[in-house]
Image (cartoon, rainbow over all chains, first blue to last red; front, side, top):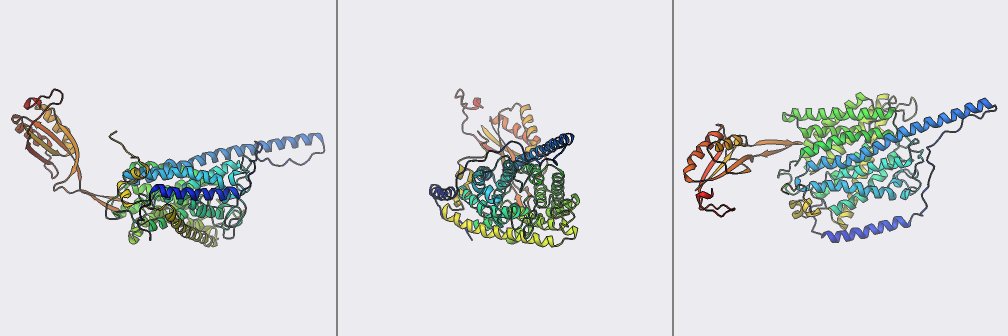
Amino acid sequence: MGGLEPFAPENLSMKRMGILCCCILTLVLTSLPIRAQQTPASSPVTSSAASPASSEPSKAVADKLNQLDQRVTAAQSSADNAWMLVSAALVLMMTGPGLALFYGGLVRHKNVLAIMMQSFALMALITVLWALVGYSLCFGGNGPVIGNFQFAMLRGVGVIPNADYAATIPQLTFMVYQLMFAVITPALITGATAERMKFSGTLLFMTLWFLIVYAPMAHMVWGKGGFLNASMGGKFPTLDFAGGTVVHITSGVSALVCALYLGKRVGYPKQPMPPHSLVLSFIGACLLWVGWFGFNAGSALSSGGLASSAFVATHFGAAAAALSWSAAEWLKNGRASALGAISGAVAGLVAITPAAGFVGPRSALGIGFIAGAFCYWMVTKFKSIFGYDDSLDAFGVHGAGGTIGALLTGVCARVSVNAIYGEGKPVGGLDGHWGQVGNQLVGIALAWVFAIVGTFVILKIVDAVTGVRVTEDQEIQGLDITLHGEEGYNLEA
Amino acid sequence: MMKIEAIIQPSRFESVKDALLEIGIDGMTVTEVRGHGRQKGHTEVYRGREYTVDLLPKIKVELVLPDSLVNRAVETILKSAKTGKIGDGKIFLSRVEEAIRIRNEERGESAL
């Protein structure tokens, strides 16, 4: 297990990282033929003309029908696109400032900027990677495990919809919406490495993790041809509406691996390290709750009934989990805490993520209720049994919550909510299709395996190139001063 | 000249300040401090982890007075700061060598 690494000067590790970046960039650029961006027409996909007419009045009617058809389609597209653009914004807000504040308040004040900087840096870094190759690796081609380079440099990604994924919205919208998921997923991992990971190491780690763990998982579950894709005939169709496996299990389990590899913070667990500002965490948690409507309801990729269903399920899941975590705490400690309530809500949101567009409101309450209590147990009892320093409970909430949520999705999914396998075809356990739970297990297992193996390999690479852990001195002084040359609060200024 | 250092409950500070003002003492230095004597702290719990907080917030009031005012000031503080419970605080007295007003470099008791 990794402990404190010998001191490597920041400028030496930056040099090594710079060389590695140049190599990757050269490889990527030289393997792609550069073609001009497609400039498509401005109108959305229209349906074909009505039946040909043999006489004048019929032709006029047919033309009129055709026109109406086009306008209805355009209206639907407008509604869908409006919702999807808002959703994309909401999901970005979940990272900045949602997660930044939530995590920021939980660390000690000497590290508040460092943790926020990690989320913010990812907003920038992942965006560029997504444009270069990320979108393509996730949603290009039709391979079972990974995409291809057809959309590299966003070639061919314009206003014309990609009918494979979202036929009523410009592909640009779909692309930018999915980008926000790719941003927040690695950001979740920073919770486990908080207060002791090098910034340079974080950047390199996230770049590799995005390419090696996130992209394959996203492709397998959501990409055309993906092996686990439930809506496109994958071999082991895993129901994951908005990312229980792709986002939460991968990041949560990876977080655990990182926490174990990096080792415990100096002084943990004897030295008290309470959150420096639960006020910030509270604000962050509320932003996460609201933003999650974009995350889950936006995953309907349309503005109709399915979005409503997912919206409601999301909200109910959060509410039930906040109550059950608080209840568990009240029973255990004699009182409910603010941190417990907001953590419960987040746990519920995590668990409902894979289920949102597949389950009804009552199931959502049930899933939330279970997740709140389960995650409470994970971050208190389970964590203290094994003693790992998952500083901000990324594994306890996201890894555990995502796993239980994905399992319960298999149980509670209903054809009446989402006829994903076709009209009348049973979806989940409550429909009688208990085999779905088996499929969920396959998806969950794959997510765990990818996360564990991928993260371990990446950590080894990063350790060799930039180093992962800061020095003990840096850790004690605080990352804001030592890594970023700033203080979060200059209250005497 | 004597210095009075009074460590008191934060909730009593306003009445101590007002009471001192009433007897003609309006110069003081006030600091927010943490500490404890025999008063126990409390326990905070964050996600199942317990933290004992045994350094409690107090207010420290420092006054430098001519000898003639010291006894009255001490009595005033005692009366206004007391709640009768553990944690009320303490008063310390010490002798002061010299006092100098920065504005006009006046020295001695007239500088107070």
